[in-house]
Length: 231
Length: 231
Image 1: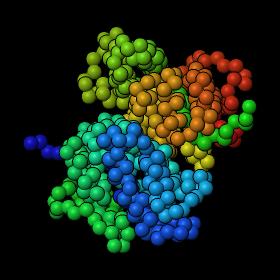
Image 2 (image 1 turned 90 degrees about the horizontal axis):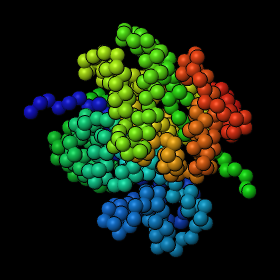
Image 3 (image 1 turned 135 degrees about the horizontal axis):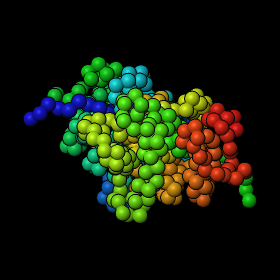
Image 4 (image 1 turned 45 degrees about the vertical axis):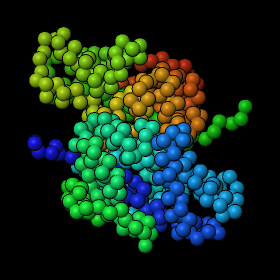
């Protein structure tokens, strides 16, 4: 066995890892006065995401980007609660996913990491969503990569291997950074390095976290500043 | 006819429009002491580019990215001149296309434009080349888009329409910015808006410029600062 190659680029999961979807969306729901339990509605919106992607993966739905999937889920949640919104308001609310705020350590940590590494998004979010979010939050990406470019959603291997190909690095030179062990495990199967950033508040103050084993990932840390230290 | 929609995003040609390939490459050839006429070699390297892309477009070559095409041309030019370079030196020299310097107005102009518009590359250069160049020159892109994402080279319509799709804008909301009338004409056929930035030094002090007609493009200017003024 030769030594592992040096890491040259970092690929970041976005929802929950870089930005706080729970806090950003529940706050916006309260501010617009939607007559729902903001916390519960936020969690339900996010919970619809994996089944919707599974419908695309299985072919039950044709390729649909995340803006489209978020909108399908939103329309269902509103209908279940007997709420009707004007089209323009529903479209604006759906784009709350473009306006998610970074965790406090995200921007300073990324700026520090950028001095040494190429930084890319690697999210199931569509490219235009990720671009709008970066402009909203000041996220200093070198490249905005999305599952949309590969017409496959994570954890399909096409996404991780496609990112390495576009960045012109070997899989072992690319480190996946995520708050979700399942994402990291799929990246590791493709040969990527892995950094687990714990985000205990991702699903709100009482939210569960996916279990993981100590030593399972190359790096385990609690912020992007710690990640920069560890690298 | 309804009024034209407002421009929401700008797509930039890169080689010659944003960066000075002639000056950057001829300077590097002189600095490494390659025994060639630096100006002539630089122009010959660039001149090999359109025929190489035509070979991909016609199917005579399978899909090959620009790093690969630049290397094929470089190897031919060196062989024609009886020059042998060690592999590592040839690979480093080929990556001079990753180290091209911006025109003096490029970075301040882009920073100004970025306040109002989404800024994307739209180049035949491969994605990793464009990312390295942005890091080298401090180019503040919101999105790095490349012909590589579409497996078509400009002026194929798939490139212009693919960029609009990924940025989630209508073709008429996207403005192509280029120093080359032929690129702009192909974009206009796809419904994009057009900004012609004259770069009279692109091909060196005596270089020719493609002819264009007055009024042919939505904007005609001499720098990105002028483009920001005009928009």
